[in-house]
Length: 279
Image (cartoon, rainbow, N blue to C red; front, side, top):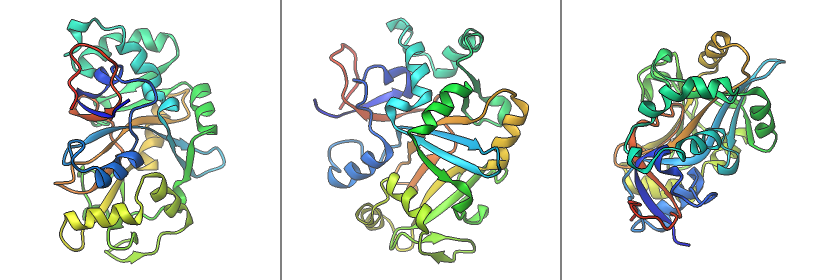
């Protein structure tokens, strides 16, 4: 089965892929380097990784990254969207989802958060599912991560919601503030490995950009997540999709804002089906 790049709205076309073949961040980081002519090199990609933010009862905060089979966003939305008739496929995510939101909420599956929270597109899955998925996911203690100054990497321009890890392409060192770079600690190194930020991939990105460029990883601030969970009672985590940025602008990994009403690309093995826009 051959990997293809599909374009159009992310979750509406997700069900056109064979299950388990949607490419994650690390896979795309590798292939972008090893197969630059095989797909849209300079385009943004939605990825198979699910992103969850969990406050711990004893204090502290966990970042959780799940693979495609355990991606809570895809679990439910792919099932819902597969019920849309073929002629309705051109609707945007929010055009479709908001009229259906109440029905899904009544089932206790999850709740969608959109414009009421400053445009952050995120999801609140039920506690049991989120807790179970976390057991087999990649978990990072956010307290061990060092974030750069908000004004040095203001991708979204909102320091109340977002925080950033800057990774120097030259050597993988972390910007610990005021453009001071230090070697990644153990937790940061494991996160970079999980996200495909290998020395080879960072070097490839460096060659595509001017000297001194960094790769930016955007995350939600724990304080903002806590404010959402304090308002929306009965949930233990906030989830969203992930994406990999267009390399022509800035090398970046988005774990902070799952805007699914956005025309982009994703990569996997499409089913044999009339009308699949793949290349």
